[in-house]
Length: 93
Image (cartoon, one colour):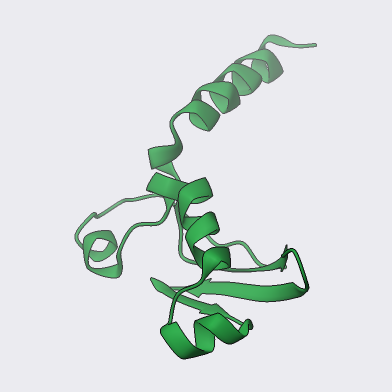
């Protein structure tokens, strides 16, 4: 393996540990719950889930679980706009 590739691998490992570098703007996932699978989406700070509880309350175990998993990578819209040069990653599918 050449030295250029080795340095990129080392950089990737460092980036993976510094999760605050990554800010999700939008994505959609399938969440397998205990009883059914649900489509959960995140778009510019707004969550949506196809489960019944979310339609009634605007929050559910699926969205709360994803918030815990992604933690610092989900930055509120107003904070994201005030950070020029923030890394933005869009994930779909």
